[in-house]
Amino acid sequence: MTEQISDQISAFIDDELSDEESAFLLRRFERDTDARSRAARYTMIGAALRDELVGSDPEILRRRIAAALTGTAPAAQQRSTPRVQWRYLRPAFGVGIAATVAVAAIVGLRAVNFARVGVPGAATATAPLQARTSDPAPSYVVPRDVSDAPVVIAPAVRLTNYVMHHSEYASRLSRLPVHSNVVGAGELLPPAETVPAKRETTGE
Amino acid sequence: MGSTEKHLTEPVARQPAGSGASDLALIKRVQQGDKSAFDLLVIKYQHKILKLIMRYVRDSSEAMDVAQEAFLKAYRAAPSFRGDSAFYTWLYRIAINTAKNHLVAASRRPAHYNLDTQDPEQAEVLTDLRDLDTPEGLAQSEEIREAVNRAIRELPEELRTAILLREIEGMSYEEIAQTMECPVGTVRSRIFRAREAIDREIAPLL
Image (cartoon, rainbow over all chains, first blue to last red; front, side):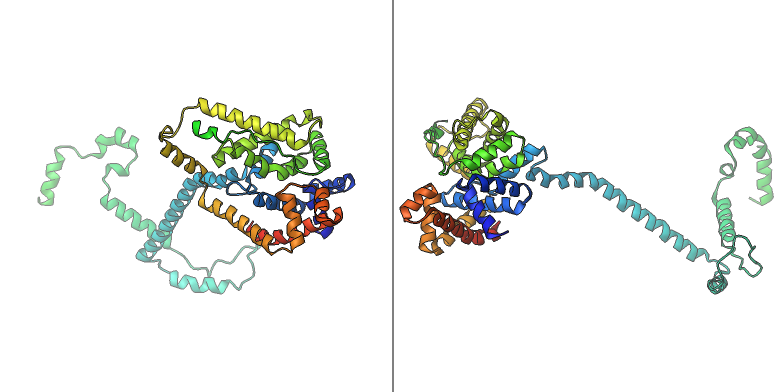
């Protein structure tokens, strides 16, 4: 900002500017926020000298009036807006943490399960897979030669273990569909008189 | 309300020196719907109006509300301003009436404090409590005041005299020129240079 403009601002706030200069300066004020700030500081100097400064922020009244005229929230309310948003964000943040923990737990448990069960052929399967990374990109037109591809039997082992464990501890009824239990319960359960006989055969 | 009555001696509107041409130009723009022109009027008179209202309403936050209401009333009433009096005189009347209305409304509301205002000692405490602002705010205002006074003391004699005659005595440039026996242009230049020197001191505080 030039010294001439500052000089005009000084005369303007004293109401000592000519009409021509006033018109020029008013046009400048429309687009020049620095000029406005300077005018505000110049008036503040006079207020300080006359002991007219009131309140914490000398410019707060001006901001409140401007906000009321433009229909926007004043500064004090704008500061509280992020607090309100944080209030609503907090549950979402909690849900996010819970989801992250759940995903970490699932991934961790999967890793533990794999380590405990073991994956036969996994050691041999990794080497060819790494070697195959240098192969050209797979084509959707020419069928791939899968004769040398490793046979990963991990799912079969897992399935077998699952069936074994399940059949060992699960009751007989729970392994059948509900409607089978209702309709064919009489056929599946052994006759009452055969049970003691069976016990006898087992030597109990 | 007895304790506040002593503050209700009617202040006299002291029209700031000057031709009023700036204010008239601004109010014409406001009448045409220019809100930024009204912002300049607020810049010019916010401290005066706030100080005026503080003579009626001692609590600074309440005074801030009343001052805001007064300015908004002035903005809404701007189309009816005919320029029969100076803008500041007109704004001053609005501010006084708004403050008085506020006091009447406040007297109808039940008191929301437990201190016994009939007891002179407690009434004094109450007044002091209402005068309190936040410590940070008071510190900032005090810091600005000190910076301004320090800068004033360091000014050359002719600059200090010019700005004090303007800001404290409220003289026009013409009157200052007669007092200091120099051209009006010199007065204008001295006041500007004084403000620039003070502004350099307070700008970092804002």
